[in-house]
Image 1 (cartoon, rainbow, N blue to C red):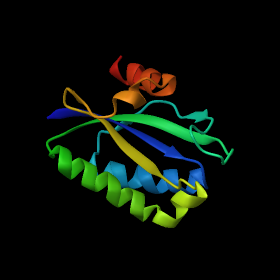
Image 2 (cartoon, helix red, strand yellow; image 1 turned 45 degrees about the vertical axis):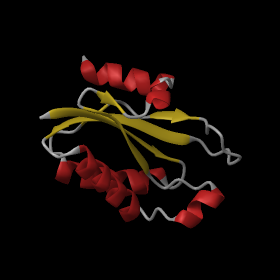
Image 3 (cartoon, rainbow, N blue to C red; image 1 turned 135 degrees about the vertical axis):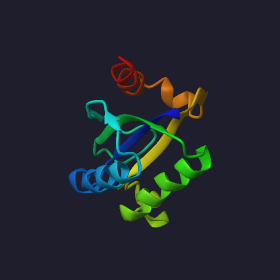
Length: 123
């Protein structure tokens, strides 16, 4: 089993899309644990609506590619489309930050809310 850390983020109808993501993540990773969600300001967007972000941890026997594929599937189930990108609407974004001991999103780990979320889940 390998440790995985992910980060979820949404700036549009957050309750609706977090509910879908939570349900689907629990089906695939039954022992998933979440750090508290945080409201953050957008980074690199003109759209000013705040994001809700949340870090989560789970253990899995699935390959890194399988985990990434499943996270993308959840994003699509949350109605994420290519058209939304141009409108800066993020219904649900789920990034695999760490798989096993491999850091996949080094820049994301520099964000205080992500570092804090990981720290809370390690304790």
